Image 1 (cartoon, rainbow, N blue to C red):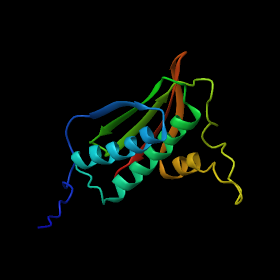
Image 2: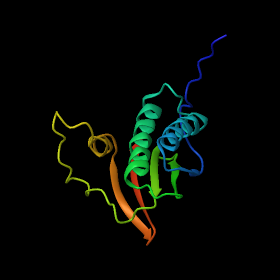
Image 3: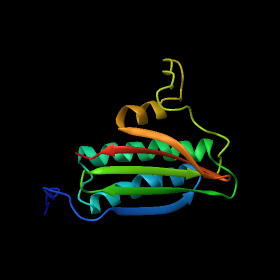
Image 4: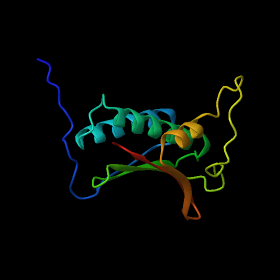
Length: 151
């Protein structure tokens, strides 16, 4: 029997958090995407919703960057999701172990040429999120974050 579960009409309540450390590998990046989709579904945005698909894509891009450009042998990356239900905004943060490898600042990304095989991830992040940026909380890590409206 198939059951359609519709998202609740109004998402209210306290700010919700989800955080996990994952290996800085392609497998860890895939797991970050799957876990974020599951978490959003548990918060009321089903897998097949536009909001879940967009957020999962953003997590996938940031996690892939953390695994490729932020990797240090033996060090993990951290995924953190913060949901602000009052305005249905999701903040996605990926913290890696390479504070010396910062991405370009928002608004300065050069478009990828058609023959490039990579280099479009942050363009997707910039295009799909309402805000994004990079912060450094300590000398050992950096966090690349973005915010997306789920409505």
